Length: 367
Image (cartoon, rainbow, N blue to C red):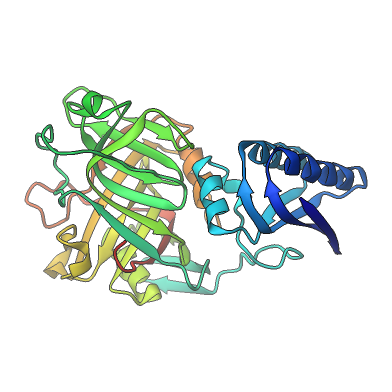
């Protein structure tokens, strides 16, 4: 492992070139420790020259990420090759995958626009101008209900923080254990939650890791991977509420795409809702029947699953998805369900939001 050092104001950039294995990790650790002993608290590892990362290297990254965090500093990785990114996502070290950009400045958290609409306002934060979500389909489209899926094949679905998904599946050690426990699921921020459709069953969840057991076994699912292009923070005026269709119309205007994938967390009267899925204009052929007509005159189509939690005030403005989702799951998990379209005959009262945040991006070509 070869190392170069470059000082940029309060930041020290450590350039790496070679294998980040047991031998290389010792060299990197020595360089970081020396920087800390010299009073450095803002350290960037430039990983462009690293094409191999072992468990020994991962341990060193985690060790120094925690140590520098305890010193109120910042430890980031930049320039990672795709294979290195995938390894770190698999082991759940999302905090190390900070947005690329100049390491000498903090990310710009200023909204690019503030809009006042009928009864509510929102702020739009630009995340990644090239952000897009690539869909992947498992099995046949589901209507949200869970009939007997016992004879259908299962597929274990990864759910790192870069992926969101909805569908019908179960958490278990193997296919056989899941056969009589299928129900609606949702994944977001590196967490999968689901509720068996059988009466009297409680919802459950797991956090993603490299070899996490139980896994998410899916018979019917829509998964999307990539980066979000926008974050909106919204709030209603006194006595006002908004619905999924209101948010979808605004997100589609901002994205200027026929369909968007999204994650939303919002206060709705005495509950907190976490939802994800797809909303778009009618006749989205690439969704292959996954989207159902939505709203008055079927001006929209959508497929959404959601999780309910006890009420807690939400932080608005610029917030990060993984940390926000993790904070929700520190509380009791009340329910996981498919959100019925407002035009469905059995649809209950519409879900209405008071305030919240939503991350979203356009849908790209099928994977």
